[in-house]
Length: 82
Image 1 (tube, rainbow, N blue to C red):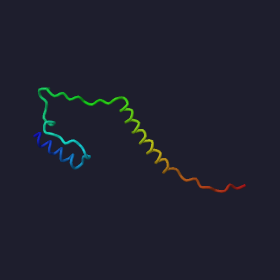
Image 2 (image 1 turned 45 degrees about the vertical axis):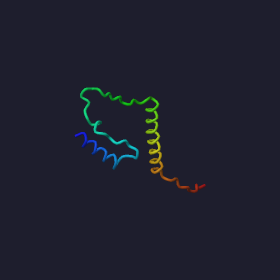
Image 3 (image 1 turned 90 degrees about the vertical axis):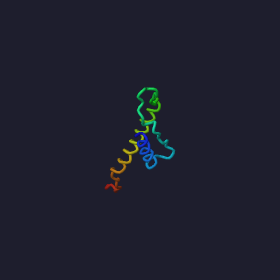
Image 4 (image 1 turned 45 degrees about the horizontal axis):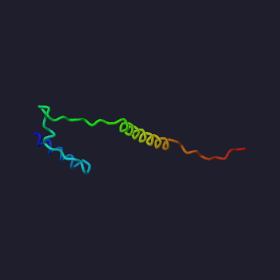
């Protein structure tokens, strides 16, 4: 079963993945019943979290400015009557 999952995942990575993406192996899909392999999840630093949030805010602010530019009506220049 792990072989089939690995093959299907590798096909999806090959079709939709970015270049240089690591392919999977069948051992990655096998359960770790005896607990010999410890998986250490990657933790983000405060600086990494701040950089990600600032990127989101920058993108949202740029999008909002573009929408504001589209909704504003151009000011027509008319001569004032004396």
